Image (cartoon, rainbow, N blue to C red; front, side):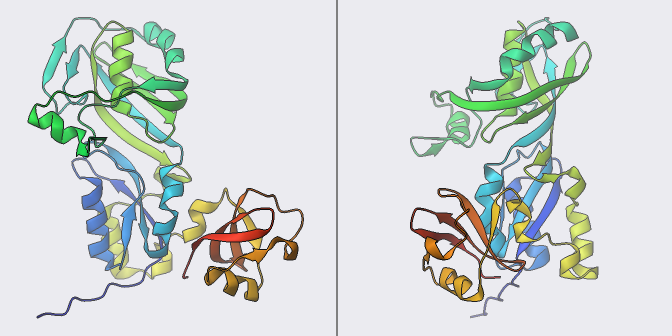
Length: 302
């Protein structure tokens, strides 16, 4: 039996500008194949028809994926008016039509209804699980089912351009927000129908389009540039987390899963806060501080 080749230990982030008509899981697979990394994962699925920022974590960086999943996201998208489609994007079948074409001022008047914390019903063609099954599988099988509304938060929604048949927007939103639902529901508010005909993610947390590279560029870098020239440090996504300097002995304690007595730390450190324990510029662990101890939550082997 042939022995399976071990992957290379790579720890850090690469931000891919995901191409149209390629699934997020396929992008991860391609990145892992190109780099020969032992472990890889993505932070926030993009539909195959969407393009833009897709952060890929390698090795120890996969332990920080939840911070990216929870991060604020920014999208640019276009709503085409006059048709409602089964998938709420241009791949689906047309299920409703009308001749209503909202003008810019009508759209601007409705935008306040989509700001702040709002309720939205995710598309039936989504990865949400209903009784253990993916909604898109149920939808494709023709099953009747309902998806419950969920609360999301829209931080900003700007109208960038408006023509007779379509309008383009920029939106900053919380995790779990479905852009397809925003397009559908906005069209309904305007007395029209609508579907997403273009979707591009321009930011995920600290990563923007300026940080991205294409898969083709990654392939070039893997073969021509040192690792440190194309991999982003694991701590890049932890900039918003307070740093707590530890000694070599304290670092060893945390790496072994042991607690550090609070009395041995700076008394100004805040209880109930998550810290990144640092030995110099080396990330040791993500920790929580309670009344008595600093406790490791995620330990890093860097």
